Length: 211
Image 1 (tube, one colour):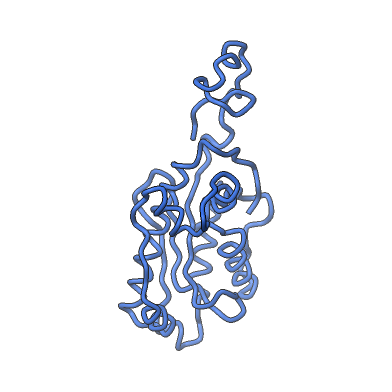
Image 2 (tube, rainbow, N blue to C red):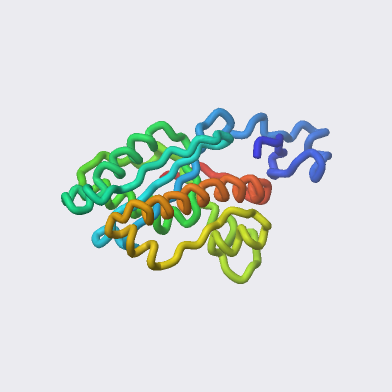
């Protein structure tokens, strides 16, 4: 990702003449920025009907995965996902660039809606950059389907897990073991998301697009 590029976004190997002429981008703009990979799991696809069940955030090149999981007590005490939203929003304020897979269409929109519901201040436009790998895959790769499962399988990136629908149903009602399975699934997704980013990073121009 940080390999020097010419003004045409090529490397020294592919555009050697640009490097000989000094037509080089002096530094990659995202160097020094804190990049984090985000994925959430929810009980419904719409924020007015569902809650965040688990979330995971993995900083680039770090092993630790920050995460949280809803509890049965929170569901039945009608606190729902308020704690999870607050914890995730607090963590996002430490991030310079958040990376998702179809997060512009789901994860970030769902999170923003739930934060607004609880009147939790969400990062404002321009405060955090957002890279959505889905749209880079859609633009740069001609494959049958663009799901994270299909893309990572095609590229030989291992780790994508699959959960039985019964597990999702139990997790929705706070079953502890089911919630842990969903959390494990969630953690694996941010791990493979980072690996996917590394694999496709040289094929795109990474813009300063806001969350």
